[in-house]
View 1 (tube, one colour):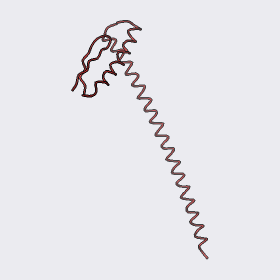
View 2 (cartoon, one colour):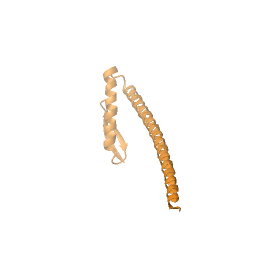
View 3 (spheres, one colour):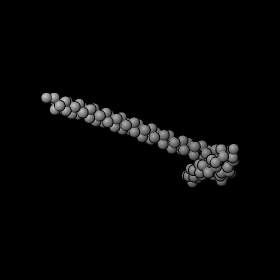
View 4 (cartoon, one colour):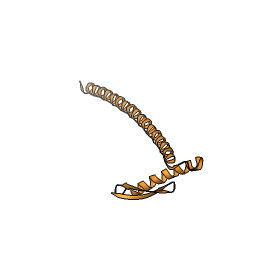
Length: 112
């Protein structure tokens, strides 16, 4: 277990994390700090807890939007796969029918 120091809204925090996750935690903290900084510019220093809550709500909203977009994309991909599977099955059926006709023609040609 490692510890990483981050700063959000000018306040230092020590965060415990798995070994090797330090760069990720720093990057995430920088993102939170940037969001908090936006609120400080918009509404001023209205208290650490309120600023962090606002940032958490905005980030949760972004995550919700991203999850919804991902689900929509997955649905489109499933629909496309179903369409492709249908086309492949139709083509396979057509090829099978054509093969049967060719075999029938070949059988007639071989008959005296």
